[in-house]
Length: 238
Image 1 (tube, one colour):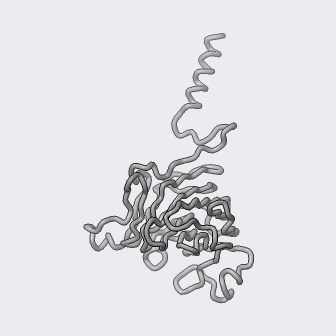
Image 2: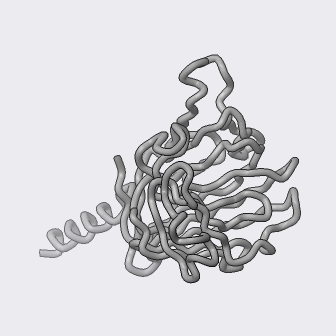
Image 3: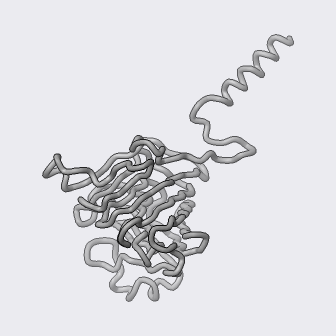
């Protein structure tokens, strides 16, 4: 009897220690380092210009243990896996000139807008505009929609439409060269964004609730030192 009991206990411990275990009852979901500090394992790039000239340098590189978006040629670095219900922490800075970049959540169909941007919701990182939402063939609502998006008849999610939804504050960014900490929480059809501890946007009624995560190359050099995802519920791997 004792040997059978010992076998059950050992077997249970072995199962509990299997790799890929995401959480336990006490500690909750385990965080996932989407950027490992060494290479781009777990990511793939979609850069339209490379279709025409494969000798061009990819805009996404590793330098001094940082993930760097060089800004050009334009494109996206996209996670291989898709995710739903999570908190994403991104630490970034414009080390040289201030410029433009963004984090895309719930990304799906590639090159759905302007033959460049994947279908998604963009959380803007552009200097002095961080936290804006941009609707990219997906949509989201916020309080005071007409104040923050413009006249209702101009709203849309495709080329030529009012796709930008202004953030709640433009004063939450650190000075140029300092690290910013952006936290994006995606729960069902809502997206909440904080920047350096300040609430900068909250949307609801999003038309997507899962997809890839993407980082942009959009004209400016940006450094990332941390891209960490903590699942609230589960992860869907492709």
